[in-house]
Length: 287
Image (cartoon, rainbow, N blue to C red; front, side, top):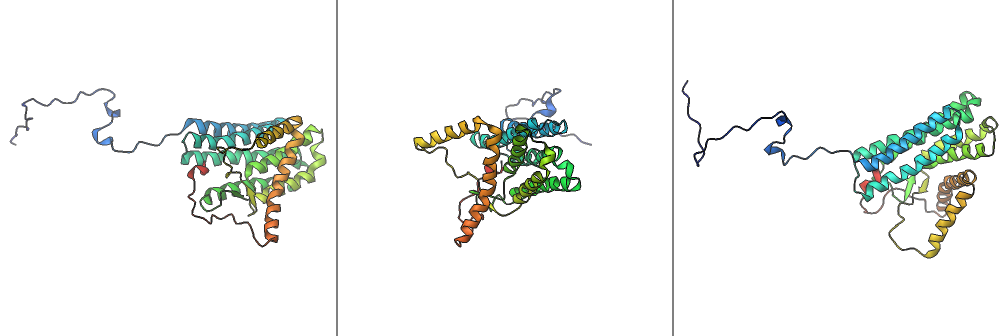
């Protein structure tokens, strides 16, 4: 077969083959400059989510070791970290779909499985089948609540939660255990109260009762001096006796949704949690 000479450059120089190195296969090609880079995982917000997941796992371990006070406090710390991860993601502009899904899985452990196991080990075990059924109703309610939140985020009014949020339901359960342990009350004496609280929290999470979300509070606006004083007074009140203060706070929040619902219903204006205006949905709320 005849061989034809290759076309030479205009300047007469002979083209040289690129030098190959052991790392040549990892080098970016010329056509790869316009390709989108693979999406990475942001460290800072997911570190808070991992911390919340660890607290949920720690609560389960402490419940198995009959150290219920440590388990209850671990759930409260998980609640605090869960509230921070989304805000950190929005402040640092590091929202991602991975973070949203990871946050939901962490919430399922910290606010679904952990509280159910804690209250079962502390009090519901003595009720036999009714005990673990009540714990399962709560755990299933938390799973359904998280799944519905992820699917309805674009159609629900951001001012309200559709049903009781899972962190608040977990705080209601953990707060009751913490207060009773602080009062040195045995869980076997509180079995039916624990049964009622577990069913109430589990079923309230899957209702359509609206709970105020505090998401429309603008922290960048100036507030009167009395507001800052009220916040300081609130933290001082909690610090006096946290076990006896936290539980009533979440009981009031758990009842507030029903109060708002029936008040508006009596006035002929049921609360609508469906987005009715043209306000764009903030995707960072999924974080």
